[in-house]
Amino acid sequence: MGRTAEVSRKTKETDIKAVINIDGSGICNVSTGIGFFDHMISGFAKHGLFDIDLTVKGDLEVDGHHTVEDAGIVLGQAFAEALGSKEGITRFGDCMLPMDDALVLAAVDISGRHYLEYDLPFDTYMIGDLDTQLVKEFFYAFADSSKINLHIKKINGSNSHHIAEAAFKAVAFSLRKAVEINPRVAGVPSTKGTL
Image 1 (cartoon, rainbow, N blue to C red):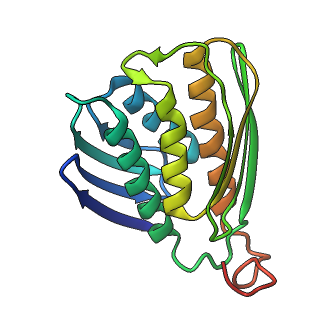
Image 2 (cartoon, helix red, strand yellow):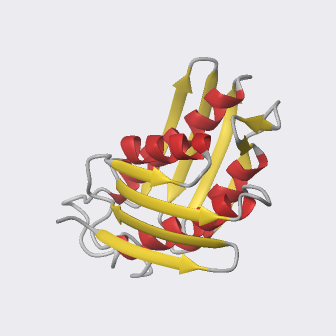
Image 3 (cartoon, rainbow, N blue to C red):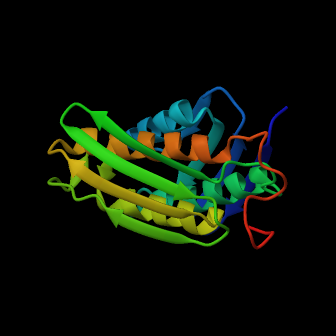
């Protein structure tokens, strides 16, 4: 069965439905209208071992901003809901992920507090049909809605496609480690007694 959640959100700008199983096998069905963003979410699911169904109908006639940001909000909400009480989780995860010329570091704390430290410069304005500024918007929205502490840093790389893909995969792999149930952890992994 796994830890699962379903979240919907409808505004004048977007209509979104997300279903996530964080104990999945990486199966992804995604349709956002932005091909490269779909590719990133597919990689996120695959390397996080999350099963994700994500459908977004956004105001792409304006641009991709609302579609990508709101997808981050809804996926973050679903992720937090699926985590539930957080009892027994490892809590921390990190990954230094290479992809050809790109090397990206990601680290996460399932802390119950939002924070994003983002240092992922791109040399290009667009990757396919995705504005590279929206990569940060997605991760900010996801970290905020899921109430996690997330750090992403480019160590090396010049190819924007590789940098973005390394970032999504590194974050996913870090989250995968952080949400794993550790049999040695009794209750919530915090000296405060809550996350």
